[in-house]
Length: 329
Image (cartoon, rainbow, N blue to C red; front, side):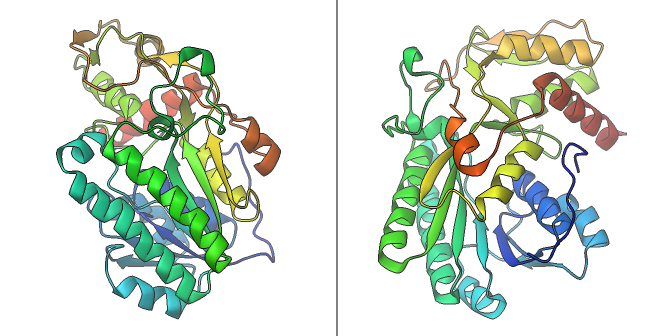
């Protein structure tokens, strides 16, 4: 847990449910909610999450935390929500691999669209006040003109992958549920989130992948020329946005990013220096469909949530290197 923010549990404690709460971002959010004094029910089928991510939370906050090995597509989800009566549902569970969505759009839609509808229906029946949804800033807007960077929320939504389409669809459903059933929502369009607990063996987390390889003395692969840019935002900063969205930003899609572009070459150079490595990266052909440039304008988040990212990439990536080093040790 970051020392950059300090939480004093107060009288505003509430009941919450976090879907995908054993995952990378979800487990950090669970830590934050528990530190704020809230009761947390984690729903996760452990297809990509891990109980290890919740080990400290379960040890320290056993009275405030319950874990449910449950798929969001299960009919049992509604029973659980009705029984627990959460005030706020944080919905992070998803099929999050763009390549999987391209290879199997039906599976992607089944989890991300139908699963999310199950979450909304369960929240509605349980009388939840609000859903805070983890949307995708990179895929939601598609391949925008460089002159439109950093992207504002007013940018047309033009996702180019089934994964992006599914995330857009959920945002549209949330807006409909708000009008039809008066259930509030905030959708956080996340930039490239990185930090400890991210899977270094996955395809999405380039910071974690570089950290794992650098710590093991293995060469890192950069796809394309490395000039492609991303907006890297640290996970503690991101969960601060989720926390604030419980009571702010109603009915809005809000970017959670830094507004800064960092090339993959720049990222590698900074991380190699931090790791004390002079190893040069290896280059491979660019992956089809990959965006060349991406960054999100965070001004709406500052205005509506009172949120700003504060962690510099050099500091956050050093935390990932240290986490990977400790995990391997």
